[in-house]
Image 1: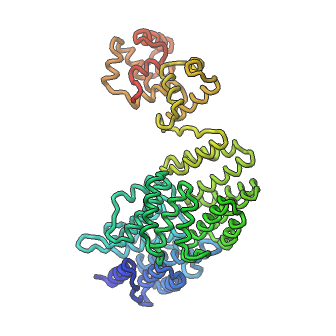
Image 2: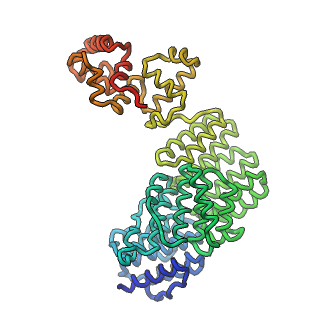
Image 3: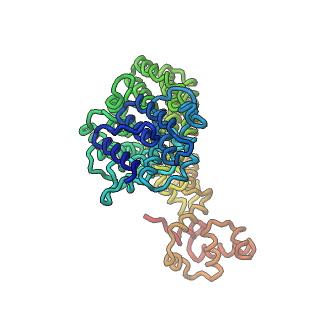
Length: 547
């Protein structure tokens, strides 16, 4: 066993068991980096910073990739706890070429192999990027392989489950909720605290997938069984469950868990990003209870973090909430818009969408319903693509408050339609005109036009014919087509086949090498033989809607 591997195993054994970390060799950058990580896990952030700086200073000119990436990751994690102001290049000034240890480590990633030390170095770098709120960077970095860490009789070290949780956290905070759910599929741990960490992470994912029942059950389990937060993992259980409750706006429940994790009013047990989010949450809870003065007190605690690239967007959201509470809607909107811009720049999609929500709320309060609706529609469309159902639900609620509805998303099909829109869609497929649909359903022409456009948008098409053709392409079976086309000539069958692609008469003519007038004659005869009066009727016969 290599010296590096032996030190890593002893350090991770200590993390898993709650024991002390072996003293590092003060001339070994690798050991110093690992020891810095363990200090951070113990919430001794000052010691973590000291060891991380010593690791960078101990790097020899010919240091290998493992030592360089691990030292950079340790430095990034130290910055996650103490970078209160400045730029990313202020994370380790004078200790790496640019002062930004994470970016300076990137050229060395390709030299990492599959050894345990290299896997852990990857972990440190990704964890540091995530902990600093640099989600766009974290999402591009190679993740460590959980199934390979420090194998003993073919079984990975218990800490390997933290690698799995890391993958889920990166995906979730990047807004890719479906990917986060997949990352946790089948994961389990024999250690109670690590199993609880999995439950807390699942609560985060379930909350943002709008699965209220699962989130509540998982969060309750965390509350019942979590130990007193004494290290980063136990505190993290409370935090992740808190963020899950935020997914469906259980502000009091989320605030209680956040305070349990934070340790005191300064939330000193938390990293900068979590402290900033914590102060925002506590300010929001106070505003929800009608106590603007308490919200301003929490906002004052957040303000010293405003100069940090880790926390600037979050502090702006906190300001937006307080400004809204004061009735300063334009200023609240401006702060939220800027927060959304900063959040997106770093890939913090959950936070950016929350800022969009705040901006739209301020726009609605200021009477700018059109701008708010456009913003909500856009964010819901983005969120739906990645399984971020909580954001879709919140956008729906805000639009309803404005007397509007969320438009169906292109490609959602039948599931994106309301019951009334499904009725309209069925009548469209029967070939009824807008006026006929209005008469049949006792609706105004204006309402029918709105429903028709929503149906077409849900199927990603622009016309009734394209709608029917889309269903034909999705649902037609060979036997269906053969039965429906009995009695047609070969040329008529060819016309129907091209019609089913959504083609116009001119396109059918061009594809079959005949005139448009001949196409019109064929279609007239096809409809006569099939007993229908419209092109949509033809397509409906060969592809009836599925139940």
